[in-house]
Length: 107
Image (cartoon, rainbow, N blue to C red; front, side, top):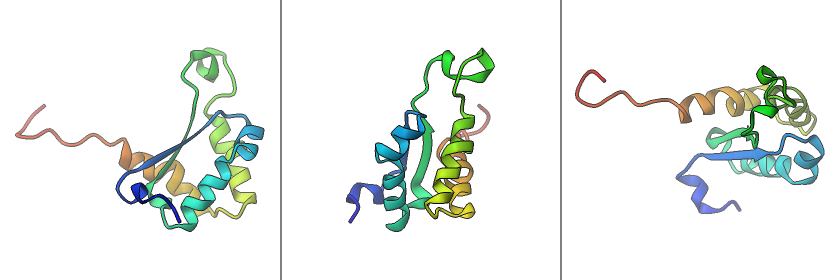
């Protein structure tokens, strides 16, 4: 059974970006459990990549492409379908990171 806190918040699953750590560290097991427990619409997947050196735009590596490439492929291999992966990578972040309309008129 998942912790009750998941019923009231969105959860960001953060991996280091290293595939061996994602698999061995339990990130995929955590995702599978959240999906099995009905929380696929509450999860956002991200990377712990806060330095410029991680981004292709700055000549770094691995870049955010690792999420949509190797991680997505590993998720598919574990039976996480296209619809669920789309929710985790597109729909959920769009909702979680949306700005609310200003109250009382123009910004």
